[in-house]
Image 1 (cartoon, rainbow, N blue to C red):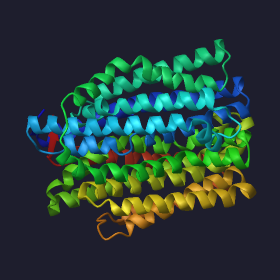
Image 2 (image 1 turned 180 degrees about the horizontal axis):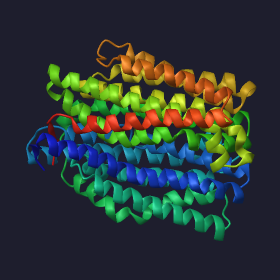
Image 3 (image 1 turned 90 degrees about the vertical axis):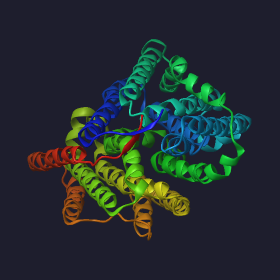
Image 4 (image 1 turned 90 degrees about the horizontal axis):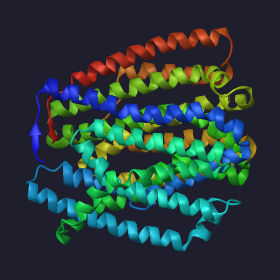
Length: 482
C-alpha cells in the first residue's frame, strides 16, 4: 500500500463514486427498516416493539465501549500517514494489539457485570439472552473495524457496500424468519444482527488476525493514546445522543412510549443516515485538506462545509413540513402521535452535521481536549433535559432533549478558537427557512397547504443536492492512500 496522488477529475469521480457506494447499503438497511416497520407493528405489540428498540439502543453503546476510538486510530496512524510499507505494517500491528487488548478487557468486564449493567440499562428485561447477545454482536462488529477502515482508506467503497448489503440482507432474513416462523418476538431483531456478523466472520476476521501477527511497537503507543483515549467520551457521547433517550423513556414512561418514539425516530433519523454515509468521505477529505494547511485548502474546506450544511438544512426543512404525510403513508393512523415529534428529531439530526465537521477538524489538527469537554457537556444537557422533560411531555420531551443537547454541543465547538468553519449568507438563509419549516410542521403539518409547501421545499432541496454534487466534482487534487 503506498501513498499516491490522482488527478483532479479522477479524484473527484472517486468522491462521487464513493458517496454513491456508501449510500447504497445504508439506503437498503434504512429503507428495509422503514418498510418492515408496518410488519413489526402488526406482529409485535407496542410494548414488544419498545423492548426490542431499547435492547438495540443498549447494543449501540456496547459496540462503542468494547474498543473506543479504535477506528480513528487505524485511520490516522495506519492509513493517513505518508510512511513506508514496513512502517505502515508496524503501525497496523501496534494498533491491532491495542485493539485486541481493549476488546478483551472490556468484554470480560461487561460479561462479569452483565446482571448489574443489564438491570440498570434494561429494567424489566432479562439479561439472558438479550444483554449477552447484543454484547456478542458488539464484539464481532469491533473485529470488523480494521477491514472496513482499510476499504475506506483504499477508496474501495464498492467492497464496503457489498459487505454492508450482505450483512443487512442476512440480518433482515433471519429477523423475519425468527419473527414470522419462529414466533420469537422482540428477540428476533436481536438475533438478526448477531447472525449477520457470524455469517460474514470469514470476510473480515482475516484482516484483524493479519494485523495482530505483525507485532507491535511500544514507542508508538504513547503517540496514539490521545486518539484512543478521546474515543471513549466521543463514542459514548455519540451513542448517548442517539439512544439514551429510549432508555429514559423506558424507565420513565414505559415501553409503549418507546415504541411510538422509535417509530418517529426511524422516520426523522433519515437525516442522520445520510450524515453517516457522507461522514465516510467527510473525514478523509477533511484530513487531506488540512494536511498541508495552506490558505487554498482551508478555503476549499470552508466551501465544502458550507455546501454540506446547506444540503442538510434543506433536507431537514423538507422532512419537517411533510412529517404528517410521511406518517400517514408509511405508519398508519395508530402512529399519528409520532408525527408531532419528527420536526424536532430533524432539528437534532441537522445539528449533528456541524458537530461531525468540527470533530474532524479537531482530530485532524490534534486538538482533542475540547472534544472531550463537548462530549461531557452534551451528555449532561441530554440527561438533565430527559429527566426534566419526559415526565410532563413524554415523547415530545425526549425529542426536545435531543435538540437542546445537540445545540449546546455544536455551539460549544463552534465557539472554539481553532474552528475555522463559519456561516455564509446562503447558509444563513437556509437556517431561517429551516426554523420556519420546523414551526410549520409542528403547528400545521396537514392538509393541502402542507403538501404544496412540501413540493416547494422539495424543489429547493433538489437544487441544493445538484449544487452539492457539482461541489464534489470541483474538489481539488489531493493525496489518497491506495
